[in-house]
Structure formats: C-alpha cells, structure tokens
Length: 358
Image (cartoon, rainbow, N blue to C red):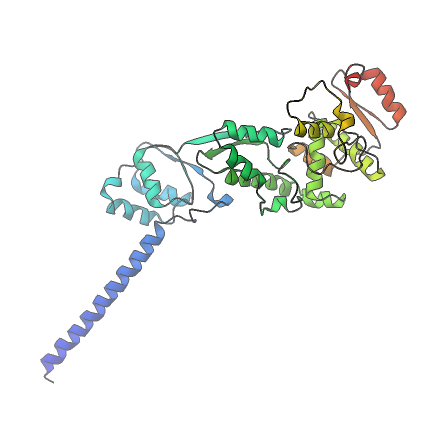
C-alpha cells in the first residue's frame, strides 16, 4: 500500500475515534445535564426531606448568585446545570425577586417557572392547640378548605411511622396531632400534613428520651402519651402542677386504684354526643368501661387530647410525694390529699361550687 494511502487511512481512523469520543462526551454531558435539572427527590416523596422551605431572591441578584444559593440550600443538584438551563431557554432568564416556597421534589424547570412568574406558591397556616381533641383537629382541616372525605380517610389510615409503633391498630390518632402553628403548601394532602405532625412530635419524644423513661415506669409510648393527655386536661397550668398530678395518677395505677378522672369520662361522652349540654352530668354514671374512670381500673384505651411537652415530661418525671387525691378548687387552685378524709375536707373547704356540680 502506498505511503500516502496509509497516512490517509490513519488520519481517517484517528478522526473516527475523535468523532466517537465527541459523541460519547456529548452523550455523557447530556445525561449529566438531564440528571442535574431533575428534582433531587422523586415527585411522590412524602418524607421530611421533601418539606417546602422559604427561598428569598433579593433585588439585583444575578442568575449565578441565585443558582449558587439554590444549590447551597439543597434545592437543586447543580448551579452549573441551572445556568445552562437558563442559557438554553431564552425566555426563562427574567428571574424576579421575591419570597418563594420551594421543595426538593421540584425540578429546575418548575423552580425557574416560579421565578419567572414572580408568584409565590400559595401556602396556608394551620394551628393545632395542646388539649384539643381529634374532633377539633378535624374541624380545623375542614375550615381550612380540605374536603371532609379526604380528612376522614387520612385520619382512618394506618401509618407506618415510628411514633405510632406502640399505638394499637384500633386506636385513633387522638393525642398524636402535635400542637403548633405550621405552614404548608395549599395543595398539600392531609396525609402528608399528618406525617409532618408525627415527625414533629417524634422529634420531641426523642429529644426528651421519653421512650426509655416511660419504659422504666412500665409504660409504652402510647400509654405514656395517653396518661399525658389526661394530665393535660386535668392540669392545663404549670409544669409543677402537671408533675404533681402525674404522681397521683401513677401511684393510683401502681396500687390498682381507679384514676377517678372525670376528664376521661367527659371525653367519652363527647364522642357519643359532641353537642350535649355541659350542665348534664349524668354521663358520670351512664358511661361504662373502659371509659368510666370512676369504676374501671387502668388507663383509657386512647389519649383524650393532645398533650403538650410539659405533660409528656411530667409522666416521665412526676413529683416525689404519696398523694392519692387532687381537685381544682373554686379559686382555680389545685388541692391534694393522701387520704379520702383529707380529700373530703378539701371538697368542703375549697370546692363548694364546682364539686356540687360534679
């Protein structure tokens, strides 16, 4: 073969290799680009990692600065891919200042569209209060615009969540709706919102090491929350009062004495007839076990309200006394006694009006 032909053949061979390398590099670059403009998490993600977060674009910030802030906030995979997307999409370069709500299951395209429009994603605030019941929580959801059937379905669902491991399958979500004020996307599902409430309560449980502390007292987490919910309704005031009442109830449980909490019986009556007259106290005798805490030993099957942090901690760390009785006097103060005679004296001296109603 002539030398010139060999040279041409070699050049063509090298050119073919270079072209193949260029094609491979282009394919790799395209795969990298497509991967890096996709959402960090799947759009169906419902874990805490996918919670929405506030993102602020200041007046005068450049596309590069916005891209770097998005990457630093963990909302996009790559600031470079974000800038390339803006370059390729000529109409998407006008990023408007404002306060946005973005999440890690949004793609670069979705984020850029929001930034182009300058429209902050509509959010809603929901407030749940300690001491409230699931009935009150249901009403808050419905008042916020959620459909009744969606709310009811979410409340009945069995959730695979660490917080609920010791909750009996037959028990409702009563007691597990952590009281606080939250901000959510307006189109967020009730199920996703409930999971976030469970996450928040679990965080408190772990921070205060409540599982181990309850176990040391012979309680499961569900039982500890149940007792805390009763304390919440009986002693909505100071932490020390909650600790004192926790001691009374725990001593009664240890001795096999009925709890004698009218708040438990009232809760059961409200489940039967939420519109009952509060002056009608006949339920104290008509309600049967396991809800009539004047007749039935042990804890109620479920919590009777949402406990706050002090109530949960009180169960883990009650006051070191031996009192067996307490009451709220006409003056709003708590009075304790170690004997029935002492309790009756407290009724006579401090509870002339309230105790007559009961």
